[in-house]
Image (cartoon, rainbow, N blue to C red; front, side):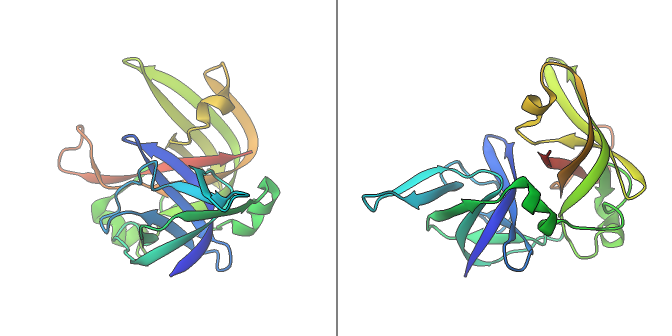
Length: 221
């Protein structure tokens, strides 16, 4: 099956890429994955191509807001990631990009981002996430980007208001450093954020508790 999606998030994990977007027709979330257990994409797998004047396909790393036509083998949902679709070996073909003002037609409007914490316990998935969705595109307000350091490692977080609740989440958008600039924090009145629910993680401080952390995967000003 072929779907055309507009890419709304592209994060780096372990040197590979987590990519997600929405079907341009149905507005359904789609996360292209190379394996049925939802592994990350390689740089080669996540290239999008166009045909040059000589009829040759030319590939570049796909970018947020780009429309891409992708062939999928099948839907491969996980209990915490219902949006996963298994890619085949064919090339992704790029189309035009959308502009930031067009993002409004792709917004989600949940009452709450699963819950008001920065994570969901695996044992609470059925309670807070019975449909297994792991992606939201939201309009957020009173946003603060904060960068701190721990053993020379950067800790990038975003706090924001959404629908009467306050959230404080880790950010994986590769553009974070560019947006925050030379300082350690930046205030923004309003922005569109892509929120993602991560794979299960066993925190050292909570050895008996498996958590799914929420991440800000993309920031659109």
